Amino acid sequence: MYVCVCKAVTENHIHQAAREGARTLKDLRRELGVTSECGRCAGCARSCLREAHHAESVCGLQLAAA
Image (cartoon, rainbow, N blue to C red; front, side):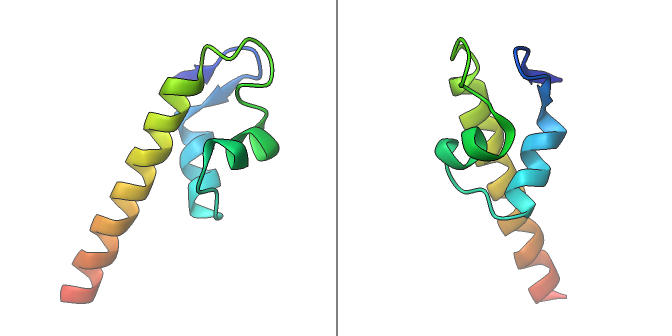
């Protein structure tokens, strides 16, 4: 799904950025350009970033338990 239409940024781009160390919306703006045009994507981008971090922590816990 496209999160930022202005910069053609998808959920996958945000998840990849999170895996590479993006932690904040500011990081996403610097790395991907989200919110740099109209700003309507800010809420969705933040939510996708949160989701990526949650998935990362859940996967990390599952690997540690195995």
